[in-house]
Length: 315
Length: 272
Image (tube, rainbow over the protein chains, first blue to last red):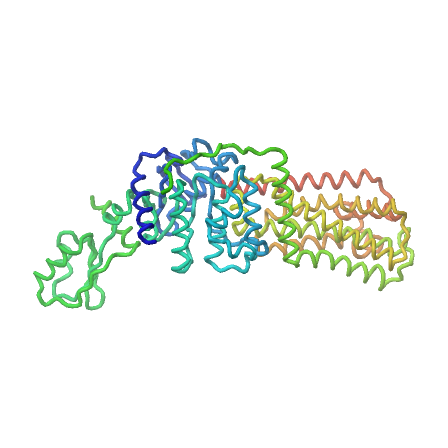
């Protein structure tokens, strides 16, 4: 089973890389809500058969980008194009499916009733049993929405996104708030979509999720794209490391070492941020054999972004 | 291994008339199911007017007493019927719209190719259907316990007038729904609905209200609907029917404009 997943992932990764046709794109798109500049001059595209992860912290502009793609908002400047058309028009949306973050879903309708209604909006929807199977909902098809667990509710919203048999799906933070088990289940279902040849734009603030699912990652922060590449490339360029140690070396000495991004004192220890940990550690141990309390860890997403933006300020 | 080639659907709505009607039908069907299963709407929309009618039209006042040209029981069908129609229409449209709009569900539907009009039509259908049910119930009570003897044709006229009169209030509900938040919707609706009902003479008959209020009533839509209904039972101020219909139509158009403004404002805020 795990081997199959790896197979699917490898096949998907081979397929990506710019040889597919561009299906959806934002071209120089900016979006402002009054004083808030949610997106600034954003350019990126989703190609046929690939899963693009739009990765960024909360408030980065991910949901705004999805709204532009879905025709729920018009760009202040620039253009958005899906299948060569403007998603404001309903006929373009017949080939699109969306899973948005929503606070209220009618609780008294059953799972199959929700799917029945949404399927009717599309010209060539999947059969009910197909949709149920793809979203793993066969056992609970007669349950009312209000009785479902968090993971099940997300799978229903997922079913509504794919019931019209769209060619591209937009999933806005699909696993937020889910437990580990439900997250893995949804990931599996998303991978199956890719295997069937669909294209997916997924937004998330979990680096792990982008790593697990995406052919390409687009990193966004404060409305701007700050990095783009395969998950491996992004991790290599942004994943900083945190080194913690108790040492007699002074802060300025450590700060002057090559490769050190920032040093701060935390009680009796020094906390060092750097892109590459090994060289720093080697140097520290060489200069201070009495060093103790050594900890090396991968920086979290916040630090990764800070490292990225700081790199840009330094170069 | 899944094939890498994808078969793209034709990017067209591809929707024949029958398919479109099917969408409208399903939208309405599931709106009904949602609300019926919630029970809050169906129970309160029906029980309040019925309760008031039984209390004021049958029990507390001698039901055969003369009032404005007819009996108390007959007079009350028109006034509490209007009250019930207004409530069914307002709560059927405004609270659902405010909630679904404010909490993101309407956005999910708008991201799909759903024809937006089907959504509103479903809510209006709900309001009008329950309005009709309320009126029929009141008539039943009037005939059985109220000693009211209306020719069948007049009874039918009453039902048609009140059911048609539900439409302006459904549109009013849509307008309200676009300007209130999900948590304050019910309170806001009541704040409008209850004073409006009182001042239109739907609870205390108009002739017993102070002259000032009687004057103001002419500007209130429920007054006009009540007058149309009262005309059928032989009561009311005996003004021209066209005058009342014009007032209601004018009111509907104003509400339609307000609802459209709200729709576009929503689009402007979140839709660019």
